[in-house]
Structures are given as structure tokens and as C-alpha cells.
Image (cartoon, rainbow over all chains, first blue to last red; front, side):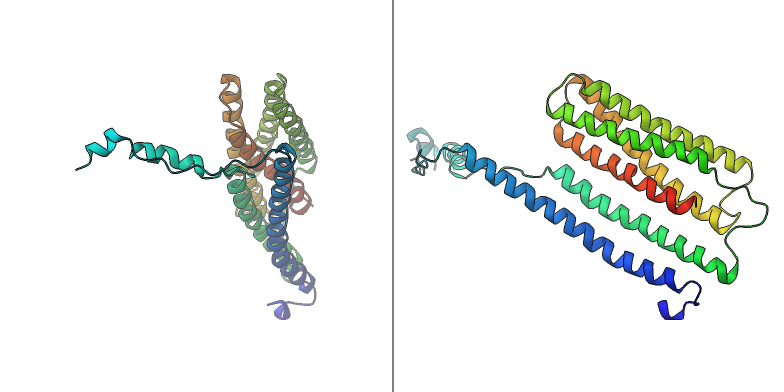
Length: 74
Length: 197
């Protein structure tokens, strides 16, 4: 398409082809970078809030069904 | 059964939302809309450059575009964006000035849109319509498209303002509306530079 342009407007075709190709990539890279920075900042906040000395809570044991509920089953 | 179902969520680690869904959705929408305006701007640039070849850009006898009035519009919309940024900082600090600042940003945006409407009315009255020339067609299409986006963004900001006054404004909605308005604000200087000159 750029090759078929007249010499007077060939620059416009070339410049706009470059912009239209690079702009979406730049915007997507910008959004991805911003999200990555937000995730990193949130992780830093969480590690600062959680006290280093306190042990992690133990996983809960699965509770047995209550007798009344168990009895209601057929 | 109900006891087991109630106990299940406690063992699942809670995931914090880093970016509100409304902001992420609005960002994707803004990227798409930026490409819409870029496509129009690309067509305008190539048509304008081709005027040297075919001479079909400005028809003889058409009224010139109101560059000075548009300069005022540019000042108003940029100021509105700055005031909205300040309103956002006040909102994050839970300041009582948020309502006044958000109202000022909205009024400045509404003044921008009002000036645009007045400018359009004058131009159409002077005979500059979509079919007058290639320049007029691009002017109405791009500036009209931007005005439509600005009107929707102002509607969202008005809703945010009313919710703020009622005390029911959610941060995610406010941030999403802000992203849309910043898009309208930042797109305008590019349109002004490309369409009016």
C-alpha cells in the first residue's frame, strides 16, 4: 500500500503505518507493566503487614457432620 | 451438608483484587477506543497529505475552523482533568472537599462540551456540513465522535457525583469513570493539533 502512494504523500502512509502498528503494542505493554507493578506493590504490602515471627495458621481439620444432619439423610 | 459448605470457604485462601475489574475493563475499552480515533486520524493525515496530489481537502468558499474557540475548549478540558486528579486524591484521603472538587471537574467538562456544541452550531449555520469538503467531513466525524465519548464520560462522572453526595459511591466505579474521562481529556489535545491545523 505504501509503495503505491505518490511521492508527495508517501511519508504519510509510512508514518501512519508505523503508528498504527506500534501504538496497540505500546498500549498493551503499558497496561501489562502497570498491572505487574500493582501486583508487586500489593505483594510488598502484604509481606510488610504479615508479622515475620508469627507462624502460619494450621489448616483446619475437616469437620464431621452433625448428628442431626447425618440423621436426616436417607 | 450446610456445615461442611460453611466450613469450606475458611480453608480457601482469600485472593486480594489488585486492580478493580471496572478499571481493567475500562482500560481495555480505552485501548480499543484509542485505536478507533487513531484509525480516523490516520485517514485524515493521508487524505491531507494527498491534497497535494488531488487537491480535494478544503473546498473553496468554506468557513475556516474556529481555532481560537477550540483553544478555550482545550484549556477547559485540561483543567477539568487536573481538578479530577485532585478530587481523586481527596477521595483517597476521605476528604470532605471531594464533592466540591468532583463537581468543579464536572462543570469544567460540561463547559467544554457546551463550547463545542456552540461551535458546531455556528459552523453548521455557516454552511460547514459533513458534505462540504474532506476537511469538514473529518472535522465532524472526529470532533463529533470525541464529543459523544465526552458526553458519556460526563454522564458517568455525574452518576459518581450523585452517589458521592448520597454516600454510596464505590471506589471501583469512581476509578472506572475517571479512566474514561482522562481518556477524553488526553485525546482532545491530539485531535486539536491534528484536525484544526
